[in-house]
Length: 241
Image (tube, rainbow, N blue to C red; front, side):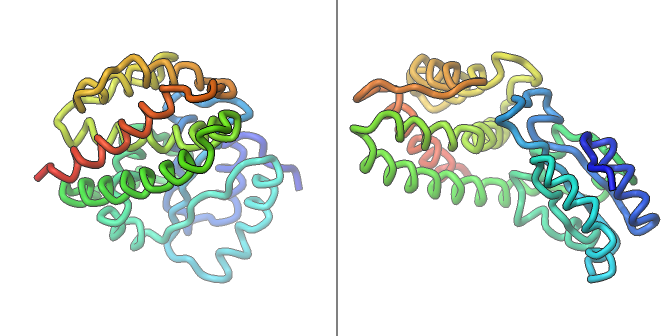
């Protein structure tokens, strides 16, 4: 079979394979936001179906395998019941998807789905503390190896930007609009001001990393500033009610 090369081709293939069993195929993430970087960003999709069972998995396997062979991650797969019941577990992800998504097939899945502030705060604190612990481990081991440290920090940045958007929402602020070439810089600047941190080191770090490999010098103070920002963000969220 021809490999689906675009999300539109993937949607057509899944509609043909599933018929009425397909509830929604949703594009989300950087591609939906307009901040996709070719060769670096994933094309993220969510497939919601009436139920997940072996016949359904067999029906979609050829299309998903072909999509994956083109270098794309397989869609997240949820039943309609799982989708409705998981907003408390994936509060950050649901907020992100709701803010920037495109329905490629089926119907809009957001009717009746809400994200509670308490769930968002709880997940965000957990995610920030987990990231802080992992980054500190890496920093302690790689502080004198800027090339490897830069690779670790670069890999963590997209996730941190997602957390920053969640943090700004919790604080009652609207994240800077996307798509915008300066969006990462604007996000971290606004978060730094909120957290009482100097914005320049973070803005420079994220600005340099945008669209190309991050480079650090030995003892680069921007790496320490990044760790300090994650720690301050975790403490800020912990103190929210």
